[in-house]
Amino acid sequence: MRVYDIIKKKRDGNSLTNEEIEFFVSNYVKGEIPDYQASAFCMAIYFQGMNLDETTALTLAVRNSGETLDFSSVDGVRADKHSTGGVGDKTSLVVAPIVASLGVKVAKMSGRGLGHTGGTIDKLEAIPNFNTNIEKQKFIQIVNEIGVCIVGQSANLAPADKKLYALRDVTATVDSIPLIASSIMGKKLCADDDVIVLDVKTGSGAFMKTVEESVNLAEVMVGIGKKAGKKITALITDMDIPLGNAIGNALEVKEAIETLNGNGKADFVEICIALATEMLYLSGKGDRNTCESLARKSLMDGSAKQTFKNMIKAQGGDERVVDDLSLLPKAKYNYDIRAEKSGYIYSVDAEKYGLCALSLGAGRNKVGDKIDFSAGIILNKKTGDKIEKGEVIATLYANDQGLFEKASQILLTATRISDEKPTQRRLILAKVE
Image (cartoon, rainbow, N blue to C red):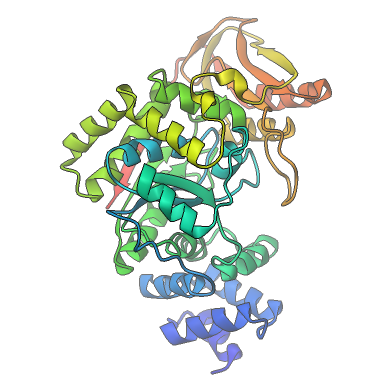
């Protein structure tokens, strides 16, 4: 089998066999295929695409390129959720405790953020002493005893994805659905879960900008999951507006805890309940109406809150934060951004809101950058809200006052105020089963 022939076959629009795909990926990881040939391979896929069988084979080759996890010693059904990423997306901090409090096990491995704000792991590490680096036996023990444990991804998981993504990032081949789907699902299938619920974001603050693109990606990922024997559903959710009112790690943890205390923002609660409902439904906890009722009850009666508190304690964190938010990191300075005219918040560029948070120190420009857990934004007004000239749109938080001028300009230019009130948009735009 020759690498040249595999590249040429895909370049000419023909389907590759499972063996050809596995050969290419495994030998690239071993260093036996140079970057220039891997670049040509990715470019051929970018232009010619892949059918579902090919994409599944690529996904499994990515999964099999490194360590896979055996969770068979976890008692009960194992469920997980994955978000394609957005601004203010802290759903795992609420959804995982809800689901775990109702008897479904959540053995979750999450990543760090690169971009707007931190990933789930960065948010959790904003909690004093919270440990996301736990050896496997302890991890399984916590899941069995408490129902949920969230840790960082092992460096040995899906090394093919790390190599291929780094290459795609510099060869203009990132935005290819087969390559995106195999990257996401290759990592997700490393974990030994029975149920997967995908939250595919769409809009200005998401990677996929249109509903059509998001549905196409979701259909491929759901197809891969089913071929891999998983129970899987995808929700297409709106990311033209940041989720909730907080953007930034400690600020998002605070909002998640407020939600677990029964005081969540309506949009954030809606998404969390929808995701938890799908996880419970696919885990056999009843029909969707029953599962939704169970999820809401867990959120309102304190069961999810107590589960989150137990998880923090089990992972070495200061569980007192659940009852005392002042224990979370707090920025030295804050700055109010005020409306320059009266009207309605007609639309916002959610991605630029994320970049505003990044400029305050809440995210990373490159791997290895240090995150300021206390930095970020609290939104006082969101799309559809009426606002008067001089009224506060948002408050910025940082430990360096010099960052406010640039950040405020980013946010103001990303906010459109109009005399016309916008049409309200649904938060959940589609479902792919």
